[in-house]
Image 1 (spheres, rainbow, N blue to C red):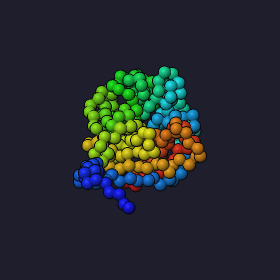
Image 2: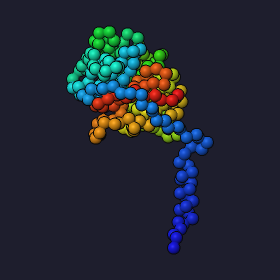
Image 3: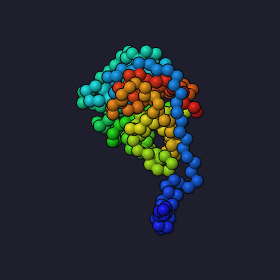
Length: 255
């Protein structure tokens, strides 16, 4: 004998399913990166951000008492130089602006401005809320704080100039973490998932999801080893790493 659900229940279920996706919205595409190669990554580095400035690679690391600004050899993964943050600070994302580097701090409401040439701090500037991800689009800084919002800041003063709500298929998307500004779009790590999302900063709409679950190839993985950092090398090529990963992965992402 086959059982049947009451008509009312079926009707309610149908309506709930039908209304779960915005009418007329095209589904956001999901991509998977093509692996081009790997470089060693220091497993003591709790990666919070990567950024290329031409051929020079910088990395931000976190954890209280271990946070650093680093310059890393993009060919070997060797740390070429490093500057420690104050011992009570938990370092987060970074962005290069001319001869300076801005770095966020997680639960201390400040941003640190570094001299890029000397790796010495210039000043600390108060910001509102937590600092997670950071990138520069050439005219402004973009900041994430782990919520479903991106904030825009003046690159010289760090003053907030705007905000946009981020949505995926019409729904708020929280957990926005490390950022990378590329060609007018913003890539964000979708913490704690093995995903990055590409966001149109004009509307806040996610237009691409990048599934990076296949990049972990290093045996048993603990809960700390979250994919966390992406840096644009050029064209369709990127470098992706994670917290305490043994390697960073060079990948190609279709435009």
